[in-house]
Length: 229
Image (cartoon, rainbow, N blue to C red; front, top):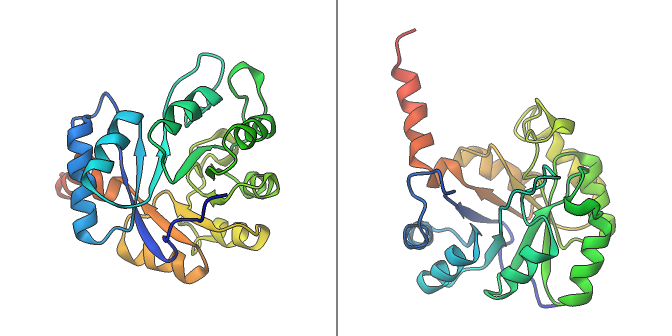
């Protein structure tokens, strides 16, 4: 296993724009990553081989790589199968993140079997589990994921209505108490105070995305605040 990147206590910025978003472009995401690095980010989370390749040209920071892809037989879309893992290996992200929720996966493959397949094929690759519940995080920890992420909290039926930042990050505190591997906080962490708090609670690092890199959503918050009652 290769040594983990130096991201302990640090900010990771998620630089992603899907096809239906105004900033969708590897060139723009490369510039976004460069801007994040100038601002003090110590890691980047990025989607797609094309974006990761461009980002690597712009910054020398650890990268959490994913591929978002829809499958008709599954709600899982973050690095759902071995095909996406194989594609990511072409650009060698430091960490590959994949959906580790307890939901049906494409072709009926279990998360357990996918992890075994990845470990057999790429034994040195670091893996991050994108989870939505405490039990999913505990299961991912038992499977030997190198990092446990809170990425999917509130985005699955099992966690519907939950927010990672509720009740002083209660879910994160519960996950920290259940797992041995480092926890990367991600999801609804949209202020510097929240980012600082999850590190204080014991998270290894923190990912911030939309609050930094999606100007349409940032603008929407300001516009909503000024809208007539």
